[in-house]
Length: 358
Ligand SMILES: NC(=O)c1ccc[n+]([C@@H]2O[C@H](COP(=O)([O-])OP(=O)(O)OC[C@H]3O[C@@H](n4cnc5c(N)ncnc54)[C@H](O)[C@@H]3O)[C@@H](O)[C@H]2O)c1
Ligand SMILES: O=C(O)C(=O)C[C@@H](O)[C@H](O)[C@H](O)COP(=O)(O)O
Ligand SMILES: [Zn+2]
Figure 1 (tube, rainbow, N blue to C red):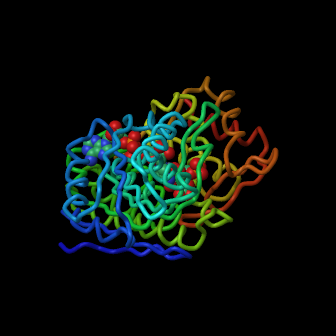
Figure 2: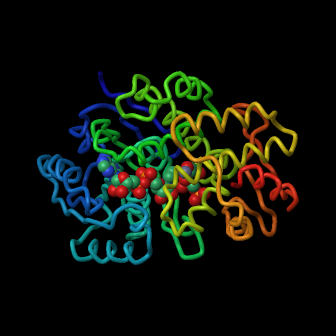
């Protein structure tokens, strides 16, 4: 099957290329004038970094491979500082490029160091997890964590291109693949219900890179994200809908010291957001039950510890959607009809938590 190109519009448009065995397209995604390419990749995945580096060397670039810690452990200021030092040692200039290869944690880090080095050099992303293909690598949001919370430091820098080679998904651990499905399902609830239909028709297939709807699910979710970020890169308003399930989700990740997968935390956060929507009179119990049943069908969690509420409530105060003391949530006014819940009462917030606590 030929590659699909999904264009993300906006002031700096770029393509998300989706296909099987498309690595050879990587050099063409770099803007002209590049000499050195710094390839940021997880140290534990040399077999994925090697062909990426080879495709760039073969095209005549000076390639510097920069291994970083696995997953979320890479999203720290210490690792960012190590990369800035390496960029200095290897003489990465403003006409050069960073290529980020890996899951969403690595693409977030690579985007962040590219955006901050010399106040911004181009970045091309090669996502190798489901989650990074359908969400993290698309849209130009990047960042690192701090002890106070998730993604609290970061920028918006649209990549020059995104290359999703579906063959890389074959080696993914099942739990990581399933975690990525949470962001696919999120796209179904906020914008494209066909995604939900496809997952419900074949949940086992949806939980596998070999599923009969896998490519369609990936492309549909990339289009959802591309449409939103193409219209609102800097999250002036519309882009907030992509944060559905993330207010509680990020608080859980922090409570778990970033040891829980992002997608798992977002799954729980989506059930919470659906319960908030129901208790606020916006949706019926059927939508909440559909949320629980689709997440359960693919093997994602839907509840969290009852005793964690005071800590989670506290962590949610640093959510980026908040304005002053006003807590804000993305909720649903119906299927594919995202809305905002502004300054909800403490009673409502706790009542919704009781519905998901175990
Ligand atoms: N910037 C955004 O818009 C955005 C959107 C969604 C999520 N995110 C961020 O993305 C991160 C989560 O991304 P993730 O779920 O990809 O997790 P991850 O980056 O931690 O990767 C999960 C695991 O899979 C491994 N891995 C990666 N590719 C592999 C492959 N092809 N085969 C085998 N193993 C592979 C990784 O090394 C890691 O151990 C979080 O930090 C989250 O905050 C960012
Ligand atoms: O791209 C966005 O915007 C999103 O909200 C997508 C989320 O899936 C993603 O996890 C994002 O990193 C969260 O952003 P944050 O601003 O809440 O840190
Ligand atoms: Zn997310």
